[in-house]
Image 1 (cartoon, rainbow, N blue to C red):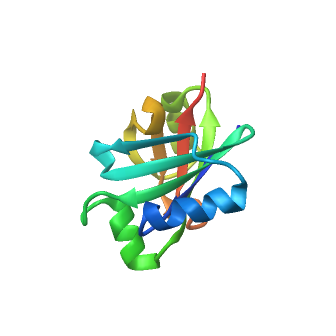
Image 2: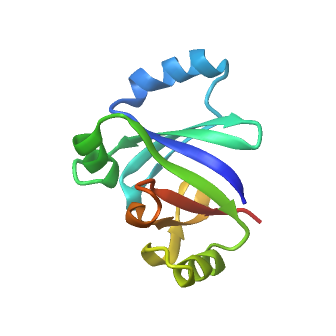
Length: 131
């Protein structure tokens, strides 16, 4: 396993992107909207990993709820796995609580899934399929 990306919830991509461009010394590598998750994502590539800035597209999105409870900041850590479905089954057998038993489509059209923070020291963990 390796770190695929760190997701950071922001109130405004318009405000956050220039800050991260200055901080990282580069322009974003990609931007997309993921309708089913009600989020707009801007990706900064950093070697083998990335930073993803996440902006809610709806007041009822998971990112909007996160921002309402905790404010801006690290939302999740994503780990690259070779097969999300197999990793979910293994982690559930090991006692981790899942947020959904089936992989879904995330940024870059990759298969993803999440582990519940209650079983991971209050850190939301995303699994990203990298083949």
